[in-house]
Image (tube, rainbow, N blue to C red):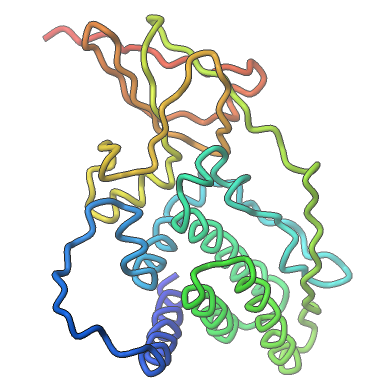
Length: 278
């Protein structure tokens, strides 16, 4: 992980220098810089540095994300085989997470490529360098879909060149295979015990990103990815989530749950824990 981050930082520094050379001169008027007050503002203010932070957090929570390795296919390695998107990684939080969500997807994808390509016969260091260049292209272009398409094409070219020096390495291709009908159902209802609690939720990975940014992760203003739950309506939970519940008498409960453990019932129950006697 340290090597990958080092290569990524180097690629991002080079990309930033190139951007600085072509960027227009700053306006003459003096502007006061105000530090970002929320997580999403921090990400937009410094996308290169924040992507390194996001990738570090994703590496720490990979165990709670659906990023299990798939076998290397006989016909070669398809970079696009996992079908990760903000919608199927973050569920209902895809739009709310915005740029941060797209960074999470890129981090999951590139960490998985790093793991898989070594298994497919490629050397770790040159693969990390190629992936670092791919990520630098995404950062420079704001993680847009068009930028990703171009960056994937560049990565395939880079890996083809590496394959010439790696006898037995799998052939690389990038074939879109994801279809809308393949998207798994993420809807899950929620209820509280006692009843009539008001709940809000956030994906665990976004909660941890706020922690890593030194923000109050339970503050919905500072950690601005929280969504209020609507009683009786399902929400799309793609992975582990953090919740906060408040009842009319002022009682509160917080915690974390794995939605896959409740899919057979279709409902997750958020309980008020009894107060321990002193």
